[in-house]
Image (cartoon, rainbow, N blue to C red; front, side):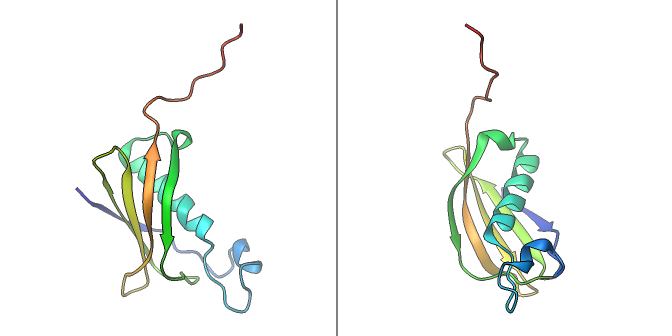
Length: 111
């Protein structure tokens, strides 16, 4: 089942925009992926430290203040496929796959 979530928008005053093309600011991909990973882990009860972004494709830029929507669904291999949509028209901004380890990391054992 596909889940749909609205994500917070990034205000033009966000510090990331100072160096991410001041004349034509766009939301850095790392912010988009961090938000997607966080929301997917919370929604699916996953530990973020055991998950990784396995694949990503950026399709269109996200500008400051644009509405963001995350759509995600588990796949057959235990991963979660996602897409990020931006603006009122909900155009595709990025898509990808998050994979998680089944085993949680454990603390090192003293020998």
